[in-house]
Image 1 (spheres, rainbow, N blue to C red):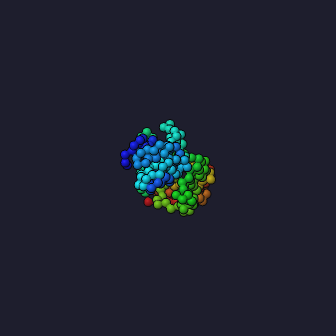
Image 2 (cartoon, helix red, strand yellow):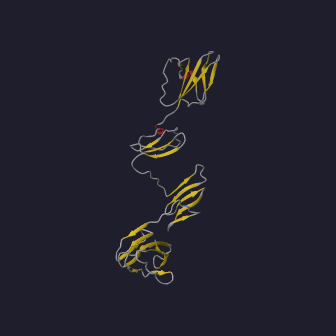
Image 3 (spheres, rainbow, N blue to C red):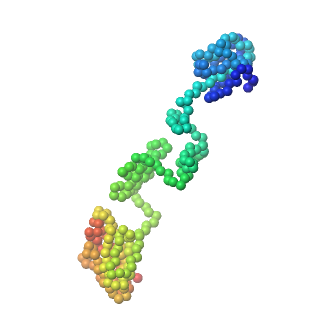
Length: 294
């Protein structure tokens, strides 16, 4: 930039600068635009007074006297800036978009705990603090990028739903879980509880689905905490007889296959029993699954 005679333009907000090389007697110069009264005009580095040019239509600057050939005319247009255009430190609203480049982060929290950003490949929401990343909403729905498929949705006072190819496959209900399609577990396990010998042995069905007992005395069995009526439930019981035969007494709610309880096992023999209920334990259907098992 060549030296200036007069007031050196110091931008306080933003400026737009147009530079022209004049032809002989040229008076009109078309700029990129300006706000009337917010424009400075220089002729060969000398600031012109307002009487030396006209700038009223927002585009053209017209000199009062024609320039000489090869004169340099510079037009500097200043943007207007109001205090209302500034976002106060106490907060405010932004009506347009805010753009961040790759790896430029929107950071929240005194310890930079929450960070939202896009790297070269992925979009990230990161909780770096010691607390939880909490998402609040009456209904929370996760879509694909085009918005035409739902991956998962969480409905207040309603279902939590997981989808495959936009079709619901697993959804919670008021009574449990609804599954659409086949369930293919990679492993299957039941909870096993070994009971200690006692005169009364209680099988708490809330704690296990397979029980065992090595008898040491006459024993009375009790079954507690089955699922509520309308839910089918089964469990197994493995009993090893004492070396000297002792008796088994079953709950009177057991309805045995064949109409009566099976005979107790012989000394030191193992017998397996299976029980089913679907009415909350009002009735247990009992079966002998195996006897004299080695």
